[in-house]
Image 1: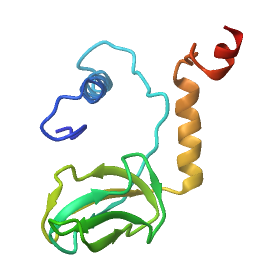
Image 2: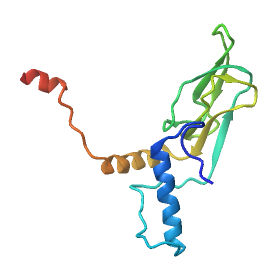
Image 3: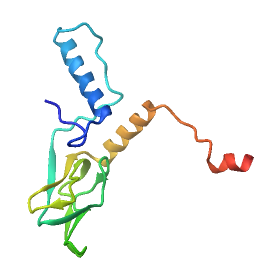
Image 4: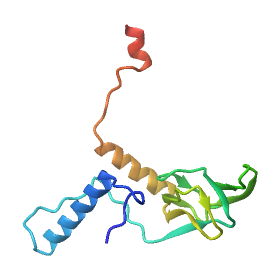
Length: 149
């Protein structure tokens, strides 16, 4: 079973990554002929922890997936229906946000953010490796090109 992407949606990037993974496993087991394909970079994590809502209300995330957070950092707010802040949710560990609740209505105990244990240094190095694999794009409407017009 593969869990990837956002709930109740098809995200083609996640689908393609899953297909590549299944085909790699099949090739490794000798079920199909294929050269194993490695991802541009890998970041292996062994532990994660969910930050959970302490009370029910409306959820406002202060972070997004892929953000590096520090233990104790405010990552979300829970408000009453009129917008008055009732609770602040802090990150239970230093790491990277890999999953976030999307439903704005939460109850006490609901999972809010999944954080994997990862140092900021390791995360930055992984980002640099990923950026090196992405094709560069040039923008034609930056300020320098406007000056040349």
